Image (cartoon, rainbow, N blue to C red; front, side):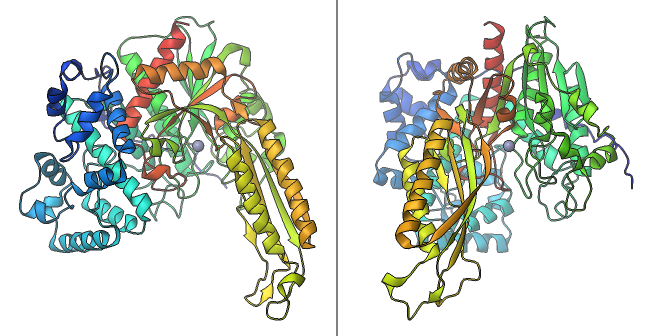
Amino acid sequence: MSRPTMPPALPTAPPAALPPGLPPLPDLSALNAADLAGFVQQLAGIYEHSPWIAERAWAQRPTGGYSSLAALKVALAAVVREASEAEQLGLIRAHPELAGKAMVARTLTAESTNEQTTSGLTHCSPEEFATLQRLNADYNARFGWPFILAVRGPRGDGLTRQQIIDTFARRLGGTPAFERAECLRNIHRIAEIRLNDRFGFDPVLGRQVWDCAERLARRPDGRWVSDPGFAEAGQLTVTYGTAAHQACQQQLLLWMHECGFDEVRIDAVGNVVGLYRGEDPTAPRLLTGSHFDTVRNGGRYDGRLGIFVPLVAVRALWQAGRRLPFDLEVVAFAEEEGQRFAATFLGSSALTGQFNPAWLTQTDAQGIPLAQAMREVGLPGTMAAIAAEARDPTRYRGFVEVHIEQGPVLNQLDLPLGVVSAINGSRRFTGEVLGTACHAGTTPMDRRHDAALAVAELALAVEARARRTPEAVGTVGILEVPGGSINVVPGRCRFSLDLRAPQNSARDAMVDEAMAQLRTICERRGVSFQLTETMSAAAAPSDGALQAHWAAAVQALGLPAFTLPSGAGHDAMKLHEVMPQAMLFVRGGNAGISHNPLETVTADDGDLAVRAFLQLLARLATS
Ligand SMILES: [Zn+2]
């Protein structure tokens, strides 16, 4: 069985996506020089009918004023976050309904008219209009305030009417507390785009990132770059060695060429490697990158964002004719998620020299061994070729990785970027408690040996323990009663345990306590248990110097250097084994959801990520 080794090259990205030069940031000197009245006047209409937000932002302005538009946006959001619940609801209620009476009667503010027109809401079909009216009524009845959506969307140029209706219908199912917060976040996004318009700022670099994510997921004709079965369903799934995976490699190769990389190649495990030569070829290199494979029905940014950001940054450097003192090596890792083969981190393991030879004989669901899958796509599929990819760590300054947060923290704090302090170490267990199955009607409560209640107690104990440990998490994700029945006291309960913390010591202390709790609970309940450790991954604390450079890079944009641990594993965790590493997180929209098609990043946050990356490079160049 053989397939063509490489698919034909894909069409070039639209030229509009890659403009010259690094666009300047807006000048806020007039705003910063203004008195209270002038400041409020200059920000009139940014937050709908709510001048108190600008008033408080003026009162809280830092000495010397707001250093950037991004700093102003964060400050305005903070004013709203610290306001009373009544003030927040007042702000939400100051907004018009989407395609509502105010739009029909033409009584919207100029800003709202612009947004509702851009998204095409003024051109609804009668059916769409009727659907929106029904959703408006249902939403208002359920929550007591109007549905708020930033209809200009993550790129800033407008969601489609169908996207708006779909989002509306989905959010109708939310809880009031979540919806209130989500409405406020959408109000901040509306304000962000209004501020961009007001101050003449266009997040060009971020739109390049956004367009790359769209283009790597979908061809210009709308077909998905996705594995068979998923492409037809409009779902993004790219697993190792498939045709979609090869198409991604080819697109990334092409983009690296276009962005000005000097050397571009596909390595022995299928990573796409680009080298942007520096002035001194002997200076230790900087390594960066992330993965382009996805989980099943995944998002467009997980991993891929950490490839696009350095690509756009290199393009900006190359177009400006600038070289760094050191080589910059960008690796688009072929595999991180472990979807087709059981092994994970195939891409980064090759670089660290820890690619396990036994992986080559692992088979996928069709029984194809990894080595054969490699040969089918034109790779050698031999250990000798893979081992030759191992990098000499002494030749590197370190590894940095930009990644979407994949969690709710930055989103809830209204912060676009976060500096990662450590990738949490984790330990996983699977276990089973054995009690006595007996009649639910005839067995008195004090004569029972309920296996499920023992696990339930363990789950609560794990929750309490993890809550007491800073930045730790503990989860009983599986809790099942095999063959359970409504009228039978559970005699068996299978469960899992997943404990993570930024330091191995904290993680291990949680494990020890969970074990002790389990023993005590089982003894008291007269049940027995068995437990097997299935995984143990060491914590990967960020390198102090690189983390400080990220923090300074974020601060240079006017943003606070908020620090958080990574709860998920990343390629940086593998590179950590051989060289210093530090990561930058980018806020995800839709409450930070990931491994899900709703995963999203705004062009503005993408723009900040590219600028932070360029700042990091500039700092490394001079230190
Ligand atoms: Zn990832």
